Image (cartoon, rainbow, N blue to C red; front, side, top):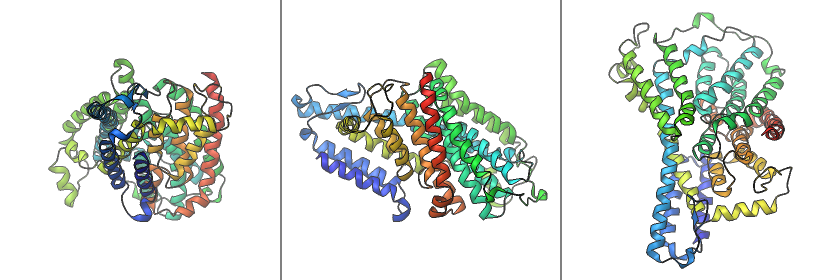
Length: 464
């Protein structure tokens, strides 16, 4: 039965990886393999020789002597445990997505566009790289990429020029998301899973992530694509659609940044702080919404939609629910493999089979090469299941450098292929970027940045 469950997972994983080839949204195979995996576990519960207790991070002693009813009860308890941990992540993401949509409802991100005054391509490159690096640490790398490419489309009319900027934004956004507990889904998973703390995460990864962004951007600034000036039509400058746009931008970003502080002070799960942040932002949104159209009139359907809905209801209708369901499916599917002890055994094999590379600091001697390969692998396949699997594979204590290296590798390694990260996929869709164009023009820059940041990480971990 274990072999069948592994086969179901592999087939589902391939379907997720080949999403663009088979034209099936990745949430569908994720949900299907999750449901089938747990159904097979329930049907074959008496045939499994061991059971992994995720709450205690170890195999259940004497599992082979337990009766059918006891095993079923243990399975139900384990399923409920994993659902609770997954729900923490999903509720957190729902809150963050809603705040971002409220900011967008008030056209808050137009404030960022007004900061860009230069026409020199290389300067604009550096501005967008730093904006991507900082914004992705606050509103996550996917949203930061959407926001910045939307701004790019307003100031650069030539798509052949714009896709070069988009490529570097992907690298910078993924680098920025890696060092923040709220900057990338995988880092958020490690943070909520109590594998890393905010202070140590920033300490370990801020400098490596910065180098991962700076080196490719510096090299790219000398490429022909970023020479000369842009033809920007100053007359096209748009005023914000709401006089509260800047206020809601700073309020929303500030509320999200407040979440790690709230967790540190209260020791409550992060989603509690995110719900508080959402509540505060929603209060101001409702107050300001009656005055939203005092500067600029909307026309047509958009005006009607804004006029007859509260900003909170409108924002909730705009969040990306397919991503939420995908995370539910993939995290619960990986939990099935973890519960059977499969990931535990696989981790033991990796520890014994991989050559060591200066890993004397790792609590259980996990090779650096394993984590580097995980980063490279995240460029080919989705980094969410990779990190979800690592949570079940390794049992190092909180803030062990292994977890921080996983956060860095999974967060930045996906930049090497355009399909390797959520930021890359959304940029690919928004700008119709060709896979092979990115592979030829941008991938080598991402690889250099990834390796440069890895070297810096090896140095920074010696300081802790």
